[in-house]
Length: 88
Image (tube, rainbow, N blue to C red; front, side, top):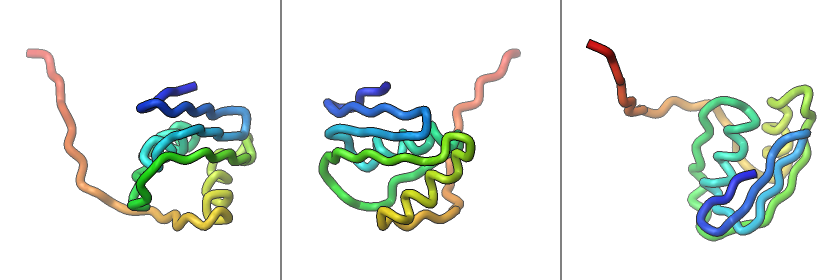
């Protein structure tokens, strides 16, 4: 379970459920399912309540569910800044 700026969300066991969360926070929930970076580029402001179910044995199936909900999902490349910590 996670809380973000007043919203709440749960993911696992084949479902994602959010209450009063932003699209950016929702993308974070999807990132947790896919275990790979997910970026919100919807430009949709506000907070939302959403619930979706996917095949827990195939986490990538969440992409099909998102597409069925009307989201455009595509692979992309974006510049990323990293903090590198080394030991001298």
